[in-house]
Image 1: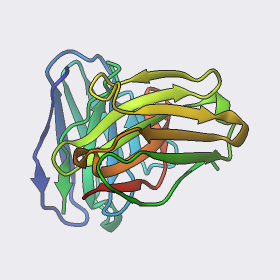
Image 2: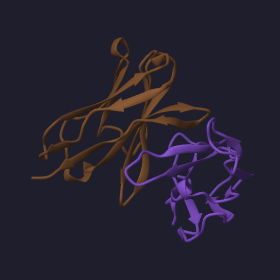
Image 3: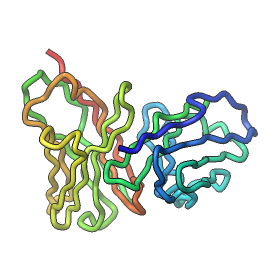
Amino acid sequence: DIQMTQSPSSLSASVGDRVIITCRTSQNIEDYLNWYQQKPGNAPKLLIFAASSLQSGVPSRFSGTGSGTVFTLTVSRLQPEDFGTYYCQESYTTLGSFGPGTKLD
Amino acid sequence: EMQLVQSGAEVKKPGESLKISCKGSGYNFVRHRIGWLRQTPDKGLEWMGIIFPGDSDTRYNPSFEGQVTISADKSISTAYLQWSSLRASDTALYYCATRSHAAFDVWGQGTMVTVSS
């Protein structure tokens, strides 16, 4: 199984801040990495697929970079609606493991 | 608009059977794979399995194979997740989601399953 780690596990930030979340995988997954946002009481929402492709309807302040084993999600100017928990997910294997999450508050 | 609507919360006893559903609308149901995912405080999000409604081809995460059955009825655009004998450890929030670009892009609202004696 591919092991997924995220850092930080939690993050305090303010509106207008630039926020970077890192996801590391235990083996090379090329660009098979997705990012999701989940707010309390809601299902996860796809933000980024294939490491850097912005999902339709997602604001351009979200961006993703990386390949291989290290990936980042950047929120360029934090908005009030961006608070929540962020998960990375590998889609290189059929297991499609998720990271443990980064709580942004 | 693509939408998945899941069945409501369930409270069951250990050993009971259960089938929860996920109805798709706003798209051609048979052309998009639907996955089932489990979310718990302990283990986070886990992908359980996926079905292609067009031909019912189904793949399972080995951790869940034999524990659950995934099926679909394309005549009513609905996918299912079922258990023949629930355990307390099946207590979780379950999501269905369509798969596109190797990611889960449209999600249901979730079904909470509680198994307790």
